[in-house]
Length: 315
Image (cartoon, rainbow, N blue to C red; front, top):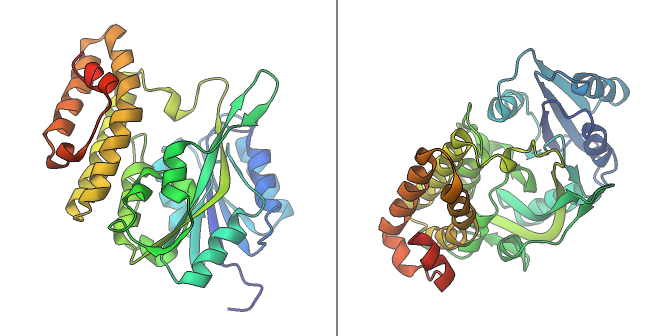
């Protein structure tokens, strides 16, 4: 490898994101670390996403395009690109989000200095204010996972890292993905994989730098905005269960407790609110079943839910 060879591949999947993809690609072009490649995966788009990706590849050899004739889903799109990665390091960027200008420099530079297998950074949401997307602050659970900076840590030492469960806030050594791929055909496919990365890594790093601006789409079409739909809820709960299972099987019980604390504080209350008025009783039954499973876990004894949550759990 020469000094100018690419050191990191960024996988950028997208479907019907032509309005947002140019900003995502511009955020790659603007990186202070220029030794990157990007695999752009058009997952069966009906809009101009494919044309945006193709134009990027024509004008910059660092971009490569994969096109799916019909949509296979986010997990399958990422998996198809994973098979093409030949750089030492690997990261992700959803095609409607944006990297901050020094993101790749900080993430790859940290791994170069520590020798860890994985590094995770902070991120913020961007919401539409009526005229433009405006980025908010780092949320408390993201800050707890990434601040202060830690090098060469593990879940045994830093269990709060398990709260950072998105694919696109991290760079990892490509070898960490040997035998590991995203679940396909489901939503929230990155939650289980994130916990697998933490538990597979010999050690990992966390940095407080904001590395991604995560767009919450104004039209409500983001996956995370669809939890009132029963199939999406079932995928969501399956992802939560799967992440907990990975941590428990790895013996990371403090991380399980940390995840339960966060799930009960942040994930469960909104689902209970939806369940109270949802027209399908199966929705409430699914939420009830999940809460019962959580309360039956041995690690639940170490959780300290606030009184408002205790009342909500008894709804």
